[in-house]
Length: 277
DNA sequence: CATATGTCCTGAGAGC
DNA sequence: TGCTCTCAGGACATAT
Image (cartoon, rainbow, N blue to C red; front, side):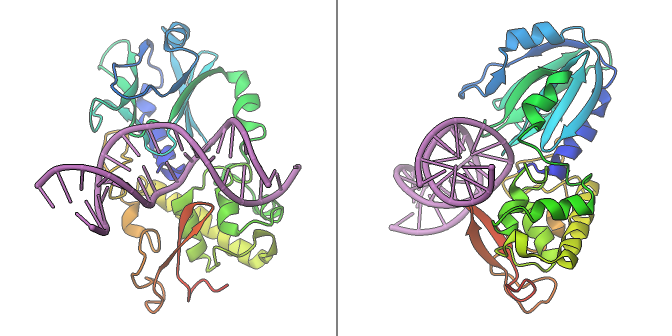
């Protein structure tokens, strides 16, 4: 499940496309229902052909490939990955970008579940179409005061609030559980009622965990979904203290047993001793 | 406006 | 063993 660290790893992993000229953008034959691609692939190919990649950036949980005045926005959602060749299999390759020249270079958008999307915009449309009304400040860039201000705006639980990309961009289900455990905050606590000192612990945990997860190239879960750009697994799953550890002893207090609850149709894991209501 | 719920999709794993 | 069923969750559409 690509969240900020996984998407950041994808961006860094394909940095070698910067400076290269695009030969062709295509959709390989695929037996599954096609993913959402806007505009049609022929138009994307036409607009990007012979353009040189000027940069790759992350926008929340999206990968943005800049070329000319265009921005190709890859949204992995649940099971999408951005790779340099070497996909886990060929049948789930949803988009391919071939580059001019040598060494041979090919970027793939691979997505097993097919919920991911591809969208080509003009650079100057990004704010209006992607950011405005949808994305708050990035989790790794937001100042502490604004973090507090935004989390004080909602009566929802802190876990659910952290997943709202309009409040803070980049945090997803896995890292939300991890950072609440690190900050010793109960996931069902009403966001607006959390004290400033507690929010400081959460803010610091968020920075530390996201940065560490990037250093580990993200979390690769048992389903194998999510790998880095070379199709190697990340290693942050070995650092998880609560996620997917239901019934196991808490690694912090060693007494509590990790519980799983469901909030907004998503699993939350926490230690009832470390994270008291 | 804020919040809650349903939906998309495939494959792994559980359960019978 | 082989089948069916449930579940995984990011982001958006729709409902409350």
